[in-house]
Length: 455
Image (cartoon, one colour):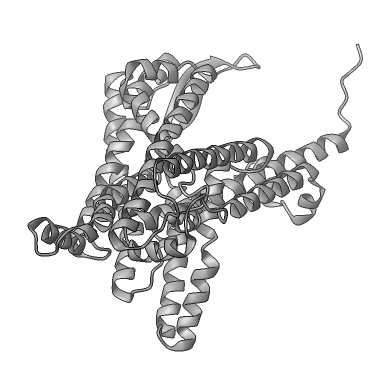
């Protein structure tokens, strides 16, 4: 039977939306902040030649730059102030989460509540600044090195002054994006950092659609491929929506307690275990590890002699680790499966969960509290992670196979990008529904004219 809240949520309509003034203000603020983000993606770094940059990016296409450029909304291709986007912050947050699960001191901070969370966020920001500085220095050095080796002068005045200016500019751009994301979270709707990443991915959709239909009009892409691509994307979106909301709910029972009417009754609840506990972390880690050597060899390949042993090794590495190659697909799938189990084991601790249930008097029917409960949770989690890893592998490998077979570059709609777009969209819509539901409850309270009884 549907609850009263579910019935109200199912009746939400546009009339309720038009009356929710606070929600509309939050949505307009979010849209304005995302417009500012898009404007910043067109502000170039000082001292960089944008015409040479376009040639540079075309020659290094296919490496990890494509992945970062997708998440930054094309900012890396234009080498703008926010070229690195929020990826250093995402990397730092993942490292801090792993460290908090493995290091006792950081783990103790995690258990301190709000103060510990603020401390970990502070460490994450420090890590983001450090990573941005390191990546910015390598980006600036790479631009200078590429210009020297290929005869193209991507940097107008190369030197330490340019590198220092580029590092400071990139740090400022990334920190501004983090501040903008925090403002969206507090004054807008949805998670700010996630919305910025999603906006960067979606921003490339019009260009992809225009190129797709232009290819269909010119005959370079058959109409059958266009229809098949649309059906593939729709099917993947439906699959992601279904699997991301799928749960294995374990029944938790608590001992009998006295109710308001003096009767003894037992409380029951459920412990939800997501099929995909690791989220989008496994594809990001796997693709980054695979594409990093490919990108390095692309930057360094021009300075190596093709007949040398090192040059032959670089050529062979680029051939085997190219998009759609069997070795790349096998290593990519293996990396996703490995990181699915690894990250799930890091973020979910069966012993800790079992101990918390035991302290609160809860137990799983038929399972002894304590060690037996922890073993049972590990047993269930391992088996549902198999399904989650298979789902992630399918979603991420199918687009790679499609690109290899058809030659249509749909990097912005790859498995990782689709996971981010669908998850962020679902979370944002859920928050909008929560605001509408709270507004509708407020109207019901006002209409009922509830007043306290005078004493």
